Image 1 (cartoon, rainbow, N blue to C red):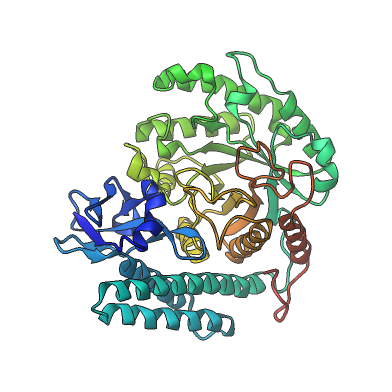
Image 2: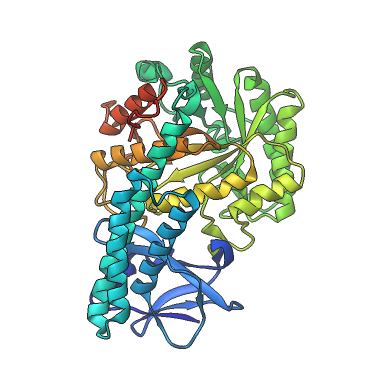
Length: 493
């Protein structure tokens, strides 16, 4: 068992609200199935068959609640100090990235390194302090400083690399795009969409085939016709999404019947491909099959279904571009769903099995009430994205987003309560970070217009169509990246 001492007056209150989303970590930061709970004034992780493990959980550092983790720790009877270990790992990540990036002497890194020095001093103070309460206070301050340093470091590195990437040549027209909602009228949004060259148009099976053998494609027709006429690059899909929200209601009773699922989906898939094949620039074949959230699949069945969609597209369209999409790139489902496959392992499995695709899509929706949608600091996001670099496959961020309003829920918040201004700042940081990495081709915002009031307000426009500050930033970045940044020019962030 992994045990942590927690101050009940302060630290426990910072952890308790999001404890249901906590999970343990093994080698390579792979989530482990284990119970994480408070008991007798301690945080306890019931980890089996492991010599060492870490814990990842939401923590309120005073500037928003975000997911933070400890290093891998040897299992022992004596408890560790939770906040001290969280601060240690955050400092370690900063130092490791400075080394990886050869960035310690860069002028842009100096503000971050000053905050990091402050964090290290506070951490040392906490280490030598014998009084538990004073040590806890120093640990919390060290963690807050380390998170602040992490954000500054990640953004400074992104700004530096963005200037290098686009010093002499502007970004492609499709470097920045948006995911649309079928319920919206494209003609009413045409003035807004005029300068956006890449649209991701979804194909939700439940919505497009609400009754068995009864396709309702009018909304999809409108979007495809508009995008094709306007000369937009169309990314269509995912064709295969077995999440609870996307699977047709009439298919739910047979969701564990792999043969029925395969055959029924093949008919839907074929109809979509035949109808829109000529207009589509890239197809998203499947999303989230590796998670086993709602439909439990064997690994060989996950591969087989993905392969079948790819074959169905490439038989009539041999030159079609295909993408496999990841819904939750940190792989939290491995700790919660039996049979779930970690994201990187899933992509590598498809490669090893000969399933051909041209890109990997990664969704990055934060601050949503969903396992896998918890807020992370910018350095954690940057480090996660860099793990995909070794796949040697182009990466597209197919849905990024952060709410602009609403209460702080289980998913946490970035730098404080959600606001339009913070959403705009996060948008700028994420687009800058994404496009600073040469293996990432495109960054797409996940929602254009706010929809259901009960859902997080992720749109760039309000439900009434009013532009938010994030829309102004989105347009500003697109305009700035059209031209070379030059070696001495300021980056968009």
